[in-house]
Image (cartoon, rainbow, N blue to C red; front, side, top):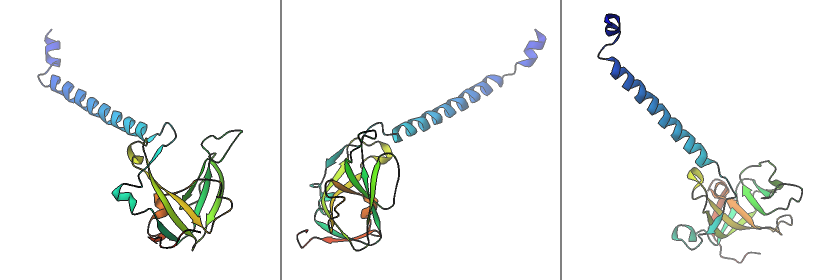
Length: 172
């Protein structure tokens, strides 16, 4: 028993508490990281609602924007598989690929984008929450895009990509 008493010191319970606290902190950090990763993963199709009437977005409606740099229109399908159908067209700042991209059409410098409405993602999570897209028309009309709803992402509508002014003439 004398040996056993010599091995135990009054500080050992505190070392155990410190170790438990460190383990708990690591666990909490890992739980937060896992939570953030899960929140970033969207488990379904983004759903959008019209916010064209809201004060922060209504000024965009009717804007006629001249393309300053080349943009790219991507035909997107929500149902990749044997019966692929293009569901909408997304205009972005660069070409992308993937199973959901059906075609790509360049939007050249000098072409115009007329904003017809503004939509916000209603089911996006965490970092994508509040994601905005603009319902647009391209001028001159591109035959390849005519059958589809066309949206520009927020990056494509930044001042270094397009120059916008309120539309004073009716769209062609």
